[in-house]
Image (cartoon, rainbow, N blue to C red; front, top):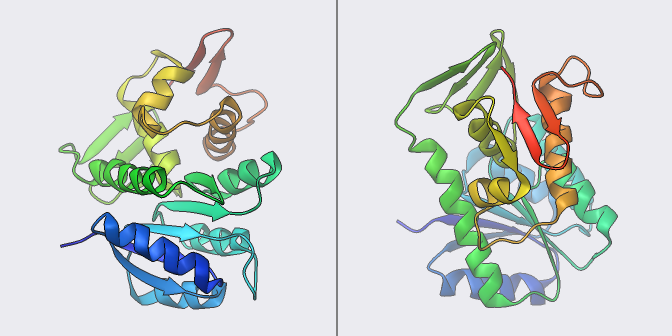
Length: 228
């Protein structure tokens, strides 16, 4: 069965091109030409990835991502936008998007990125260990739900990948290159600022004071260490 892609874009020329690229990669597509249409589809249908434009007729793609994540939906989201300012990409990532691709895009690269993101997200579901416990933290890999002291915390798929990496190897120092390899994969380039965005998002969710973190600790000049 083909993996399913939800394309959220109101420009027929763009979403037809995206459909063509996805079909060439043996992916099944559904198109939503507005934010509201996308949200309504997600109420009754599941997808393996969402390709999200920022400029939609009824609302910004950023708002759609906010609503998706607030409902606990962890479907991977890749923003595909003509807006190429650093602020936009970092803002999108901070809301829970998993990647940000600017238009015009290279079809072969986009297809590879989409398939890599789907593959890495599915690898979490196939983890053989049902519960991972580390200090006050518990992660149920079968339901992809995360808890601190028994209280659930909602993560995006990339946040989940990063937290799983930390929980499986507590007290190990992770360089940014190691995080790239384990969370994004070698084939997907991402800048240092994006790593910092995800670290800050995790800290805001698991630390009592993200300005003085005790669980995700910066090791100056090297990277980060997770302390249970």
